[in-house]
Each structure stands twice: as C-alpha cells, then as structure tokens.
Amino acid sequence: MTSPRKILVTGGAGYIGSHTVQLLLEQGYDVAVVDNLSKGYRRNVPAGRLFAMNIADTKALTELMRQTRTEAVIHFAASIAVGESMREPETYFANNTCASLSLLTAMLRADVKHLVFSSTAAVYGNPHASPILESFPLQAVNPYGESKVMVETLLRWFGAIHHLTSVSLRYFNASGCDPQGRLGEEHEPETHLIPLLLRAVATGTPVTVFGGDYDTPDGTCIRDYIHVLDLAQAHILALEYLMQGGASDQFNVGTGTGHTVMEAIRAVEEVTAQKVPYVIGPRREGDPPALVASSDKLRSKLGWSPKYGDLRTIVEHAWNFARSKS
Ligand code: UFG
Image 1 (cartoon, rainbow, N blue to C red):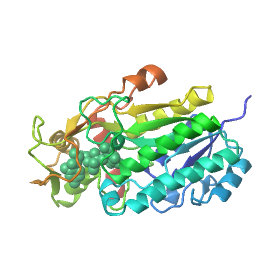
Image 2 (tube, rainbow, N blue to C red):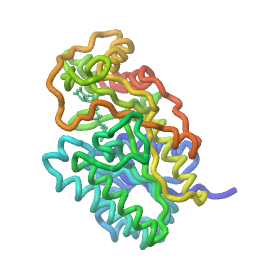
Image 3 (cartoon, rainbow, N blue to C red):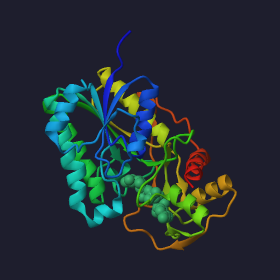
C-alpha cells in the first residue's frame, strides 16, 4: 500500500481552509495545518494537525516542511476584507503578498514543488463582460485584489526560474458550509451576504442592501455563489493535477450562474420560512454590478462539477450551521 500524500495547508483553521482540510482527510491525505489563529479557530482543525505559526517565519516554515516531508502546499492564509484593504493597504501587502513570498522561499529551501493558491475574482476588478474568462485582464481595483495579483506574478516567476508548478484558483463568492454542520462560516466582523441575511432573520435587525439602482433585473448586484465544499473539491483536483505533472495554470471557481441580492433574500426566506428584514441603502464603494464566472475551463481541464450548485442548498447548509450555534 502506498503511504498517504503529505500536504501542508496554510490558513487551514479558517472558513475555506478548514472545509478543505476536512475533505482532504476524508479522501485519504495526510495533512499538516499552519495557521497563526489571528482569524481561524483551533477547534476547526483535528487534534495533532495544527502548527500555530506565522507563514512570514520562513525559517520555521522551512523546518516544518522538511520535518513533515511535505509534497505540496495549499495556501489559504490571507487577509480577506476588501473594505479593510482600502483603509489599510499595508496589512494586505504584508499578509498576502510578502507572507506568500516567505512561503515560496520556504518551499524552495525545503524542495517542495507544487502549490495551490487561493486567488480571487477580485483580480479582475470591474470586468468588461460577463461571464468572466480566465484570459480577461487582471485589473484589481482594491489592494486586496492587487495583493493577490502580485502573488500570481510571483508564481509565474517562481515557475519560470525555480520550476515550481502552481494552480491559482480565482474564487467567486464562497458560501454555505459542511452539510453535517461540523464546520461553518464565522468571520469576525462578518461582512458576507448570506451569513448576514441569516443573522438578520435571527435577530430582527435589518440588513442593508447595498444599492437598488444597478443595471440588473431587480436593481441589486449579481454574484456567483459557490458552495465551500465544491470550492474545496476544486483544490483537491488542482492538487492531483499538479502532482501528476500538470503545468501551472489559473482557474475560476464559480458555478457560472449569477444571483441578485434580492434572489438571495428570497432563498433565505424560503429556507427559514421567515421574512428577512432589510432596507435598501446606498451602493458600497468598489462593488462591481455583476461578477459571474465562466467555469468551463475548470470543468473541462480538471473534471470539476459542482455537487451543491443551487443557492437554496447553500442557504440550507448555512442555516443549519447558524441554528446549531444559537
Ligand atoms: N451585500 C449587501 N449587503 C451586505 C453585504 C453584502 O447588499 O450587508 C451585497 C454586496 O453588495 C454584494 C453581495 O451582497 O453585491 C455579496 O457581497 P459579499 O460582501 O458577501 O461578497 P463580495 O462579492 O463583496 O466579495 C466576495 C469575497 C471577496 C472577494 C470578492 C471577489 O468575499 O473576498 O467576492 O469579487 F474579493
């Protein structure tokens, strides 16, 4: 019997990272998690797998990869709030770009040659057409998106010069959670639409819809909501592709279907059988009207397809988790 592949996951105590770790373990991988626990939760990581350290510590990370005989890395650790990045760009370039450079340096020293990178639809800025193809120009409109573009650039050069192969996964709107409710979305502060809608139902405090005058069917923004487990599975397919000798590449991860904010509100009302209290407020600065992925490349090249493709299922799973917490 062959021994399980050894994977290092940075940011594995966070929302998307912890779901991916769970799926990796279920699929027979041997996983070590590095997380500084600034946003993630110790309880999200199975006992004995967490190494509480900062990826900016190149020396410690190199040592850990050597000790655990890491074969490939999945890199989630990052700051993720677009609005915050407009106030504190330095945090985003330090935590996302510089810390990723530290990770890549440690990988070189430990002779680890494959990386799956957590990129974002924010690399496209305000795209000129929909759905968005991977070949569209990278024109980030905030430091968060730019910090990820910069990592994609680092990866290109580390590939060309050091033969490190990587897949950048450009996520659309990650949402939902483990159907069994073992893990969920717990950001502090919460800025994401679906958990905020569920919170509004639970507390009765209205949520603000950011803009009702966009050029969309009901005037609210369109997004492509992707179930976190479908996103996690995309990481595992990317990992297998790289470990089988695949060349570096970039893929969108979305379902290819967009939903307006009002459609999300209706889905929450159906699932919870309660009214969502909301008010229509002004537009949020930097929000593109519509972001919908073309996921054709991911489907055709990596054989991915979503298992939980509809918004209602996403909301159901998120609601199960929210109820288990209250
Ligand atoms: N929205 C509201 N009210 C709220 C929160 C959100 O109306 O209180 C709307 C937003 O305007 C947007 C949609 O709901 O139209 C989704 O907003 P989120 O904040 O949940 O997600 P974003 O689309 O802004 O951001 C997501 C990820 C980012 C990533 C971005 C890529 O959270 O990390 O997609 O474009 F950068």
